[in-house]
Every structure is written in C-alpha cells, then in structure tokens.
Length: 392
Image (cartoon, rainbow, N blue to C red; front, side, top):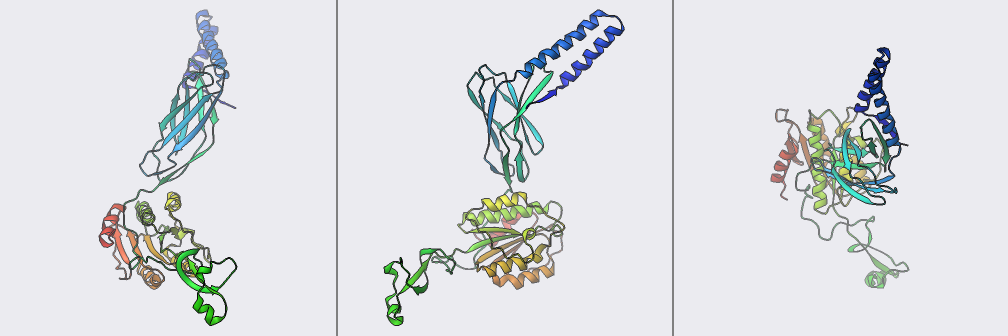
C-alpha cells in the first residue's frame, strides 16, 4: 500500500480553493466560484494521476557496508520498470541516522532498468539500521505525493577511526615453532607429546625407541602450534573519562585491534561492561579485526559499569582456558588501587600495556614498571607516544 501525502503546494491550493468557493458563494461572485472549481478540478486530476502509479521494483545495496568515521558510503539503487508503459520521473527517499536523502530517478521505458548511485550522509560511530527506502511520485501540479516502501532494511557499520601503531609486544622474539597445548589443532609439524598408536595414525610418526621400551606402539603427537594472542581490554565505565575522552579511548582500542590483525596475531576485544561475575565463557579469538571493530562501533560507557575491577574476571577466564596473550588495557584516569591490581595480575600475561586517556592537567599516578604505560589526551597523541616506546 502506498502512502498518500498532500504537499505544501497542495495545502496552499486547498486553502485557496476553499476560500474562493466560500467567498464566491457568499458574495454572489461567479468568477471566484469558477476559480475555486478550477482548484477542485486540479485536485481531481492529481488524484487520478497518483492512483495510476507505475509498477516499479527497486533493489538497494550499501557500498561498502563498513566504513571508518569520516569516510563516505554510497547507496546503489537498481530500479526496474515492470509495467507496460513508461514511468514518470520519480524520487526515492533514503533515511540514515535521522537524515533524509532525496534521490531523483529517471523516467524508465517499459521493461527496462537503470542503476543510480548516491552518497549517503556522513554518520557517526555506530551500527546504523537503514530502513526500506520510499519511492514516490507526484502529479504535474505537485499537489499530491504517493510513495511506497521498496526493499528491506540494510545495516551500515561506522567503525572508529584508527591510527597506525605497533601491536603490544610479546616480551621477547616471536617463537617460530610456537607454544603447543592439548587444545592445539592436530596435524602440524610441532611436537607436543607421545601417545599410544590409534588406528589410522601415520606409521611414519611411530617413535620406535619408546615403543621398544614400553612394548606398546607409541607415536609422536604433532600439532599446529598456538599463536600468541592479543587481548584488548576497554574500560567502559563512565567514571574515569572526561568529556569526549571515551571516544578517543574507543579509537585507541580499535587501533590496537587493527595492529594485531595486521601483524598476524589472533585478537579479541573485551570490555568491562560485557563481563558478568562468575562468567567463565572462553574468549572468542579472531583472525581479523572485523568483529572487534563491529563491537567497538556500538560500545558505550555507562555509570553502572564496574570498571577495572572486572580485570580479575578476565584473568580468571584467560587462566582457565590456558590462553597465552599480551594484553592492552585502555582506560581513563586510573587510581592507585587500579594500578596495584594491574601489577598483581601482570604475571598472567606475556606483556601488558596500559593506556590512560586523560587531560594533561589531570593528576598523574605513576604506573608500575611492569606495564608499558602511555598517557595521552587523544588517539593521535597516543599513537606518537606508543610508537616511540614500541617499535613497529
């Protein structure tokens, strides 16, 4: 069903028509009545025009579906005239983040298609659900407008802006062969342990010395080595942040995620807000930064968030699942108690970085030497300071 709307021109014409008819009848002035009837006739023509609407189908695509703050996104609209007569010029109305975009559509011959590209208005960081667009047309007098929804919803992710930084160091040279565990994927070249032979095992993996000593067929259990991981931990409590500093913290966390992915490390993002007491769910590691950046698109700070005290829970999860990770903690102004907690938990990670986003005038609390610490008021300043401490 289409939505019929009386335009501003239509409202003005309707007021004039009623005034002319009323004035002409009351004043016994036939000429005014004739002008009023002309307005009525115009509305009748307009109603007939918009009722005979063209048979159009439209498919919309958003390209790209993920952009960085400030980067443009475009809509691509493929319109097909499924009717047997030429369609009039139409207008498509697109809405994103509360802003309307009017897209002119050309007249189409019967059974023909056309593709129209148009820029989307810039949107801030977030996950933006773009509702179905409206395609409509008006009569030649622009008195009435009829529109109908076409297509479905689309989603546009606007990721935080990032700066190029080095990933959190691993505390030494990168192990070429890598660490192994019982959870490692079988079939690699790294030796993990010896075990009894099972049907289907490669006979070339039989360890004959151990077999002779035990009297049982023993094979080498080779696995794909575990890759050191990068855990990005963002404080989403409102207390530590000043005005505008939380968005800078989000950009710093995003920069760490991209740096880890670019260097080939599995990466995970956790926030203080998504940790629940007693939650031992394993951390979800990702080979690319796409999922963490999607999460950072929608993250918000909250006064109800318990903040850096959630570090205890994240350490419990890391230890319980045997993950070997370097951690980057991104927060605002920290207290001495928070730093003592970080120093106590530091041995559970390969290395630990701490980034404080605060004004230069804020009180300085000296972090422990075990942490690679940077204090900055913006993501750009953080990147310069971090890259001086940690070479890329």
